[in-house]
Length: 236
Image (tube, rainbow, N blue to C red; front, side, top):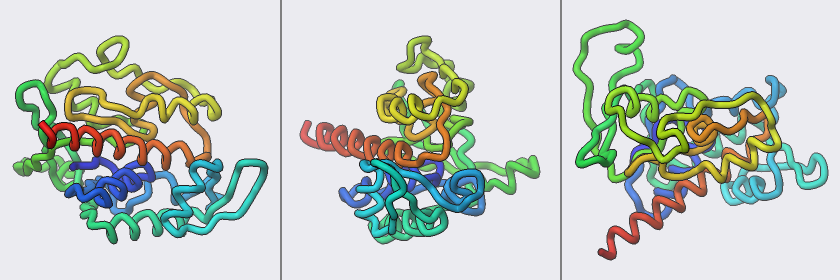
């Protein structure tokens, strides 16, 4: 399984995939993992999660404290480090400073990713990339939906969206965006799934605020979908 992006949804997805015994690697274009979680809400270094999201942090042994009815706070830095550590403990391999520049498509199904060093991309050097084959690929790149857009640009395919193309992200509406993240977490093209903000940007939903519970729940859901799909394919 290839997870593109090591933000909160990507890390949670990789944790559950590896825990289920699926060989999983995460590819992160930046030096650090964690996406926007490091800064918490407006750099206050705390994140907010709802009751359902807290259950995932509890499982990963990340401390929380009650803030309001159904809402909890966690230290942003502890949350990022905890997500990364627990994912690695289950067997996830995380590759930082690696950019996903293309996809492998075979018989109208995504079958892997094409990667290169981020520094090579930034320098504009002509260096041949590497190919990583994978049964399933997850776009967890967030707002830019870099993987979905690469598929659109290179293959001109029809996605499982109303228009057949990436719908784009709408303006901020935290409450609705949070709820729709789970609804939009699904397969967008055979072999390619979207999670977290990539899900909302792909299916045309709203941007969210500093509540990270939806990111965590989306990561778990996409893992559950792939695990179920893998079991079905294995039984055939």
